[in-house]
Each structure stands twice: as structure tokens, then as C-alpha cells.
Amino acid sequence: MIVEFDCGNTAVKWRTADGAQRGGQPWAALKAKAGFDFSGLGLPAGLTRARLASVAGEARTGALVNYLACTPGIPVALAQVVPGANGVSCGYAAPERLGIDRWLAVQAALALVPDARLLVVDVGSAVTLDVCEPGRHLGGFIGPGLQLMRTALYSGTHAVKVPDLPGTMPLAPGVDTQQAVSGALALMLSGLVHETARRFGPVDYYLFTGGAGGLLAREFTPSRLVPDLVLDGLALVLP
Ligand SMILES: Nc1ncnc2c1ncn2[C@@H]1O[C@H](COP(=O)(O)OP(=O)(O)O)[C@@H](O)[C@H]1O
Ligand SMILES: CC(C)(COP(=O)(O)O)[C@@H](O)C(=O)NCCC(=O)O
Ligand SMILES: [K+]
Image 1 (cartoon, rainbow, N blue to C red):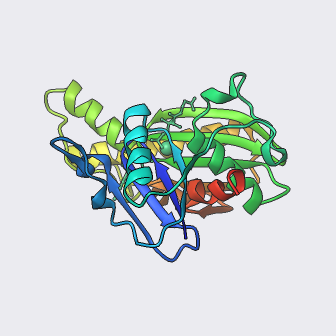
Image 2 (cartoon, rainbow, N blue to C red):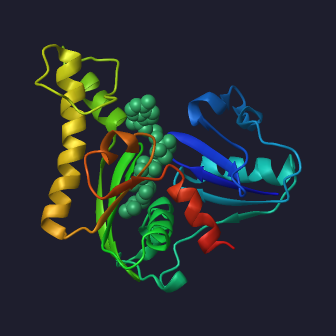
């Protein structure tokens, strides 16, 4: 049984390749005193190998790879950006600098919605937008995600310290600080997607993924929310 991992800056997400079992934990929840405790991931028995994509940095990625190599004792294949793979060119001048999560989401998106100009939006720790068309990734944008924007206000102001992230788009101007911040964060993300499409479209189809992808998906048509888009790309680059 193959296990697939998407390691972001906030959380580790995993599933078995057949999609039957899945889980995830924030890195913060896996950090024990002496290092990482990956037993908290709740991986099933009977794993034979792993496919892994990580933008979480060498220390965290290396710790997970070591754990997999030692505890279930399985080989781990690490996904990398390979321009031209599956007939898809990479927009970056230095493709190895493009986040592997973005590359995998683009691969999966192009396979899911062929023959269209796509805008792939991943709303995680950061929000990333990637413009692509059949056979071609053109490039994109990176901004702070909801939690990063909230904490920027929290740490940079005296009186704008709110606990919650937006769950929906605002229906009216905010009438307290929490509503005012939540509404703005949602509008900033939505505005970024709209403005990217306006300037760099036309966009035939929007694909959303990431922890807060659901916030935006309903705002754009035609669109689809695909929570596993990064994991879906793994099998395409690491068969
Ligand atoms: N229930 C939620 N409501 C709003 N935003 C959320 C929620 N859960 C997660 N998020 C956002 O999604 C981010 C985590 O999403 P994820 O795609 O797992 O990130 P990463 O891939 O960077 O680890 C959080 O930082 C937060 O901004
Ligand atoms: C932009 C990202 C931090 C997004 O990661 P995430 O929000 O999923 O944790 C990641 O794709 C990354 O580290 N990219 C490398 C820089 C780049 O893509 O240009
Ligand atoms: K992201």
C-alpha cells in the first residue's frame, strides 16, 4: 500500500494512494520535546512505499523521511520540479525554485481540466496562484494566507488582535473589529484572484485547494474545490 504526503508550512497531510485512508496534523501538534513525534499522524499498517512532496524545509522534511525509513521501514520518493515532465513546461526561469506543491497542483489541474486556461489557487499558509494552459505553466503569485495576515495585524497593531479567521465572505461592512478583519482578509484573497484573472486571463476554469480553499471557490465560476489537488499530482510525477 502506497502512502502519499503533502507537507506544507502549517501541516502534514497524508492519504493512502487508493484514497481509502487519510489524516493530517499541524507540525505544531507533532513537535515533542526531543523532536518530532510522527506517531501522531496515525499511519496505518501494511505500507510498502511513500511518495512525498514538501515545502516545509530540510529539518522537518528530513525528520519525516527518516521516520518513514525507520519505523514502517519503507522507501520514500521525494517529488521534485522537473520541467517538461508530463509535457508541461515550467514558467520559472529557475524551475527548482518553484514550490513543489504548486507544481503538483498544476500537474493535477491540467490533467483534470484539459484544453483550458486555468488559474490554480492554493490557500494554505501562503496563498499561491498559478496561471497555466495546456502543456504550459506561465508563472504566478505568492501572498500571505489568512493566518499570516491575521498574525501580522495582531503583532503589528495595538488594538487589532482578533482570534478568528473568516469562514465565509463578508455580507456587509464589519461592525466590530473581528468582523472588520475577517471581512478584509476574505476580500483581499478574493480580490487577488479576481485581479490576477482580469490582468492575466482570460481564465476558463478556476481550481481551488488548500486549507481555506473553500472560502473562495464559490466566488468564481466555473470553478472546482479539489482539497487533494497536491496529493493528486504526486502519482503523476512519481508513478
Ligand atoms: N477552518 C479554517 N478556516 C479558515 N482557514 C483555515 C481553516 N483551517 C485552515 N485554514 C487556513 O489554512 C492554512 C492551513 O492550510 P494548509 O493547506 O494545510 O496549509 P499548508 O499546506 O501551508 O500547511 C492555515 O494557515 C489557515 O490559514
Ligand atoms: C509559496 C509556498 C510557501 C506555499 O506553501 P504552503 O502555503 O502550501 O505552505 C511554497 O510553494 C514554497 O515554498 N514555494 C517556493 C517559492 C516559490 O514557489 O517561488
Ligand atoms: K499554499
